[in-house]
Amino acid sequence: MNAFIIYYIICIIYCFYQLNKKYVNRGIDYGTSPELDGIMVLVMAWVLAPIDVSITWIRMVKEAEEARIRQNKKVL
Image (cartoon, rainbow, N blue to C red; front, side):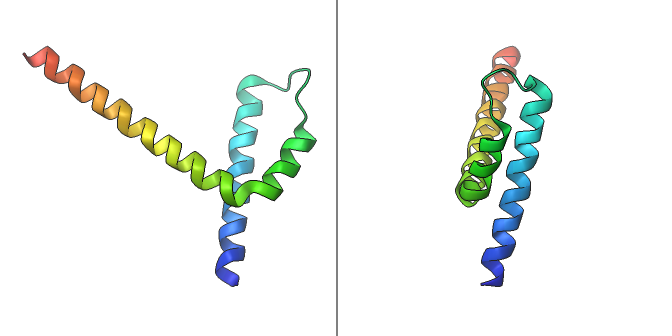
């Protein structure tokens, strides 16, 4: 039970960090609802954090592979 609580807290911190980063970069425009975003994070953090980490990892691997291919084309 303690491991689940620690996992949940880590996910909440990660999701709120990413949400804050989004608000700093894009600003809070008309039509956005930080309150609802916060509630969504509290309810769905245990699912959102692993999905976001997985998508970020896949994007990093894809970019590295594309860079490797570009580097190999320059050599040839």
